[in-house]
Length: 268
Image (tube, rainbow, N blue to C red):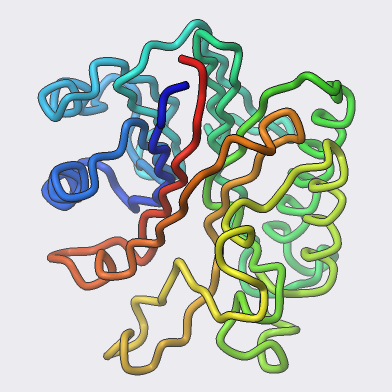
């Protein structure tokens, strides 16, 4: 078995934040980084910069200025798949498969806008449709030996202690009951396990995102846990450690999200 450190990070413009990506790679030594919201078309993705950082295997799926996902790795990929959902070319899902057959699914789920009403808000309707389609897709692929890891900015904080105030955020997009219920369906589609909450119990507050709007994000500490790591039952014994790199929110020109690292034993 090989201990593989898999990180997920909504980077909010990969080119703009290359300096803190280099800092993260040097200080925390991930083997794989899955980025969301890369905001760069494929022809301008800084692949050479990642190779210089020690990630020779670089895959990306992006567009100009918006969305986009990328996965960089010290371990080779046996297969790569880029998928769009809901009939939109918005580059939100990149799947990479390692030599042992483990599939790593990197997702950037639509944020959903401000109004949690699909009749009034097209963005929220898109988010619910996206979740439904992805859930049905995993349900259709369900098999006992599937070695799937799902990571990314899933833009839902499902538990009461995944937000700074459960009561105040019940009608705020990312923590509404309809979104939480959709995420529960996605979990159930393949009996996924929430790896983060295996290591940090649901009784503890835990966040991975703090708004740029807060003048002092750390003092206010009004965060949400929007970034996730899941595994299928065939990988239930793989996770061995979990880190949320909260100090990254205070680095120079930070993303509003911080990296989450799951260390797993994989037969690479």
